[in-house]
Image (cartoon, rainbow, N blue to C red):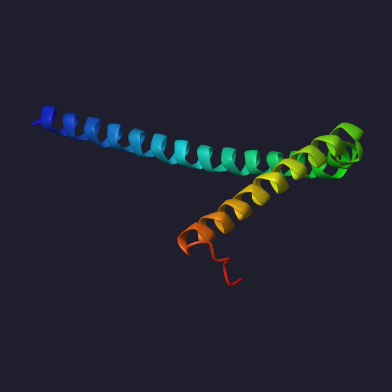
Amino acid sequence: MQRTGGIKELIEQIAINLATMVVGVTVGTYLGAKIMKHELTKEISHYILNELPHVLESENFKVKMRELTRSGLRELWKIIMEEIEHGRNEEGGKTLGI
């Protein structure tokens, strides 16, 4: 009978150790995530306040944005003209009633 009591105590100790480990990992993960969130927030704030204004003021950025804007407007114009032409073809040469 002594042996059964020893096995029961061993199983209880294993269960306690496992539960302690699970709680420790859970709490550690939670705290780690909170710390990482804080660090990322701090880094993003630093970037927005200190680095982003320099990027936005740079001539290279302005040139790239102008190029992208012009390219986007050209593509939009092509789409509009294709739709108008498509509408004319469907209406037998009539213009769309826009």
